[in-house]
Image (cartoon, rainbow, N blue to C red; front, side, top):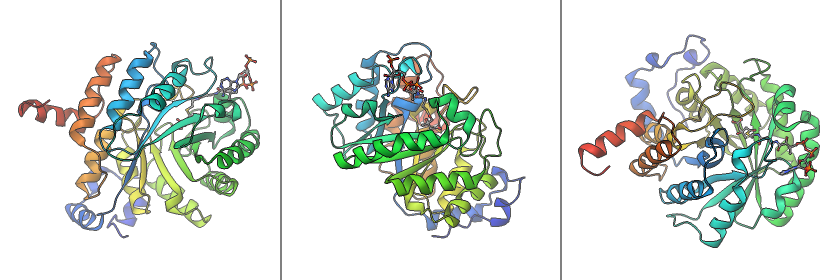
Length: 340
Ligand SMILES: CC(C)(COP(=O)([O-])OP(=O)([O-])OC[C@H]1O[C@@H](n2cnc3c(N)ncnc32)[C@H](O)[C@@H]1OP(=O)([O-])[O-])[C@@H](O)C(=O)NCCC(=O)NCCSC(=O)C[C@@](C)(O)CC(=O)[O-]
């Protein structure tokens, strides 16, 4: 596919949204009639960093509402040590509720669960997807999972084998791929590519390349994706996971679309942050991502009005401000129309 995203801008460190021309936009719109898949990570990545305890019922209700919006993949919780991430301690309740009473959805749903090792694997049943996670830097790996990168790969080998034997798909995150809170923005793209290739070789079905800190810029996203391609990692094996800490998530999404990426992670209301990435703010908001993708002519199947209502509801419920610009604008429209 060829989006007319000017390459000379991508190689420039002065790239700014203001330099998109209307010609670029209209050509993009013509070119991008594809289906783009959104993985909603709000119930896990979005909530894991909240200090106040969120009742399991609220998490369950969030998953149920999201499932009815046209999404087909929701990361619903994680099975990690509660001492490390207390907010995810009720993930077993969320899982039980989904299994006992599957949420109403427009499409067959995949629920994803984050696992750091084989310990939580017993919690699974088919139709669910296992997400493993590792880091592109040693410092983040130590802080997040108390092991080196090599130890992390060693841990995942049996987990991956077991998951595959049991018939679960495996998604693998590579965190801090575009900047590390401890080592800075210059994370080696070759390291990310090497890890992606190893994880795919081990049997991962999809690699979610995560800009945990939101430090990613368009030129560095471009370089990373080019490096992954040169290492033989196909765009269809990748998802991109942007945090919007520096407001670059959508421009980095554009760069990724140009590279043929068709799966993106986001969190309703722009919820999020990582407990081991000080200062990192939310994931790119699902509402903003959906609005952006639809504006390019892409199809997501996601109902923008519905996710905007959910973003408003969940942020109020947990006492946070709603950081989804498109969500707030959509709600204002819905209020004017009397259907908010
Ligand atoms: C990996 C460990 C467990 C190692 O933690 P450890 O302390 O090195 O583990 P251990 O193997 O020495 O075991 C210590 C205790 O933990 C227990 N244990 C062992 N495994 C589990 C488990 N799965 N669930 C529950 N408990 C577990 C184990 O049974 C034992 O219990 P004890 O005998 O002391 O009672 C710990 O570091 C941990 O839980 N880390 C999770 C950190 C986390 O969840 N971080 C946030 C994820 S977000 C992220 O990474 C980024 C991402 C994915 O969102 C994308 C992005 O970058 O944006």
